[in-house]
Length: 355
Image (tube, rainbow, N blue to C red; front, side, top):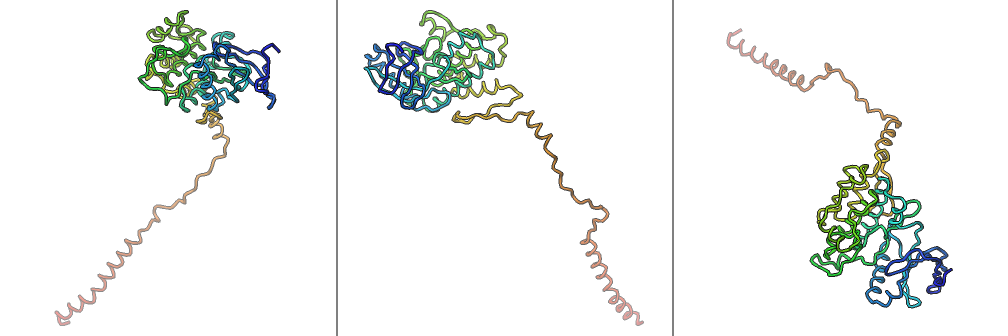
């Protein structure tokens, strides 16, 4: 245990540092009350003195605490101790997606799609809840050893209800390697801005490179706003043309040309990436459970092994026996009518002839 390993609020004991950023440090810790591993994110001392950073930290806790989804890191608690704000969240074993890519290089197509579909599920849930993440990047996605992905860090997320379409800011929020052209221009973000960042991540997973690179953030912003991305198939010819079209659509400069929300991108990738022999994955709208739809092969097998149901047998009749009794009855009546007139005409005849 290091000198910083202490107990916060007489409940959370810090064990070791997991990572750090400009605003906060993340520790693996243990909840002494519930006896379970957790992660604790502590606002840095210098940031704690800045009211703006304190507000962002509180906003992250409030925003993420209202999101319950298997692809979003769960927030357990928020507190203040030793003059520092902290957030208690679920502990996710593994590493962030950026470290995973640096370790493995470009990923197999199916693996990349599976990870992005999970990211889209988490981000799409936030969109449906009325939040724009605004800082989508692989550093903010945690990958477990069994390749489950969880989105984290809603520190600069925005509620859709507070975003005016015509707003413009002199301060640009987000990460220059991943933010959308409208964010680079200081314009209002939207769910389509998160979709653009997801497209940049997919590009990176499949090619091992970012679509735009520069050490100058201003130059990066200009590239996102003006330059077309190099077609990913130039870097990885194994990428199918249809998948390349999806990536380039998502990286469109105009938000209206992309998919409107992360859910839409996820559904497109899900149907594209699912192997034909296993059938599509049917996802419950809340994203909490998934089930496989039966494939064509399994359906055909079921049809073959199921015993055939005999069709009802219709009695066969001889057409020659189809007698029209109505017509016969009318004919008989006509015969009787004519026959009844014969005695009358004989009486008239004998009267006239005097017979």
